Length: 504
Image (cartoon, rainbow, N blue to C red):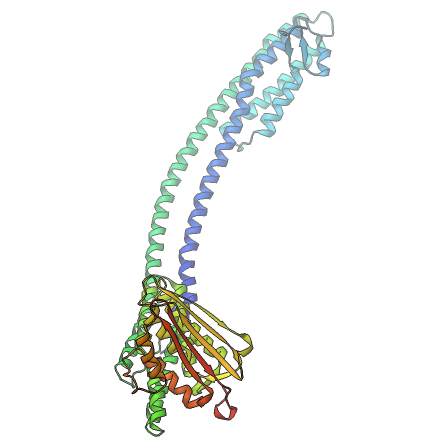
């Protein structure tokens, strides 16, 4: 089958695509909203700044200009004093400040000509140009009156200038400012209307985009969920078939590489199981029978499809991180189970096997299970018979911790001892009374008939049998327990002869 487009994407890439499809348009929508608000805010602030400048001159300019020039006209003020700036008329606290008329004109020209921003050709721009023109003419009239004030016999001319030019020009400037203010307020009203229209249009567009994003996101999430749950359900069903004894059951490969890794590992495991089943018919009956039952017990399809069922449940809940984590742990678990067909692995690999198993069980029994693993790094590279610890740990979980109210803790320790290694699997679970403990010890020592596979000591019995077969007198397994306090299983292994195992 040709894999194209969406099918080429890994689970991580698909989840990233879903995030991209949702995050980018939403980010664009938010930026567009902010941009619209910012544009409106900038225009509004500019208009308010212009109006503030215009109103300041509308209130004071005409009155101050006419008063200052009137005092010059009647000769009460020497106009040359304006060269130093404004003039304080009087010495008491009620003294009047006469504004320098030329400074007032220069200030107004700068305010209206440079400070106020305007669009050329608009009504507001026309009024500003009218104000600037009046200021130029007013400056000429003021300069002429200031010059006349120093000359005798110019009073009549100054009266004419004050009456006809200065007062008239100040009135025209005030009128222009009033009209400019009107047009700016009209512009603000128009801006508000445009903002309302743009807002309605933007809201409509944004709602349509949001619906589109939701629909597309729903479709993508459905596709991603289906691409995960469908192969996992298929793998779970295959595991159930294998659990019912159908050794021909094989997992199908789909378009998701992460699941295919698990499927291929599962198929390889199934092939190994089938091969082991055939091999038991040709080898020593007791040894092969014990190994086969151990493999069947450890490669427990019930554990597998329960784990897969948990993965499906987490995937449907969009908990992608735990899906990837649990899938990886399950893959690592079976990779160690298969281990290339070798019977021996390093202690580091055995620790990884146990860690993968407990991480999976921790996700399933989060509220009742806690654990710690403390294996001396100095013994990590030593070779041991594989899958010695997992049945003991499983027994501690299901018959010690699981039945205890409030859950409990499993502690695994490994260290060098004499000419070999020791492992301790300790739990603070329900424990056993003395009678049950003595009965278990007899079974492990082989002084009782072999237990039924359905009984809870079967996994430990197989471990005891296997280490005796491979290690002989160099091995031992002992159990101590107290009712209500917990159980500790001590496994002691001697050194292996390198000729007895195949290196990985």
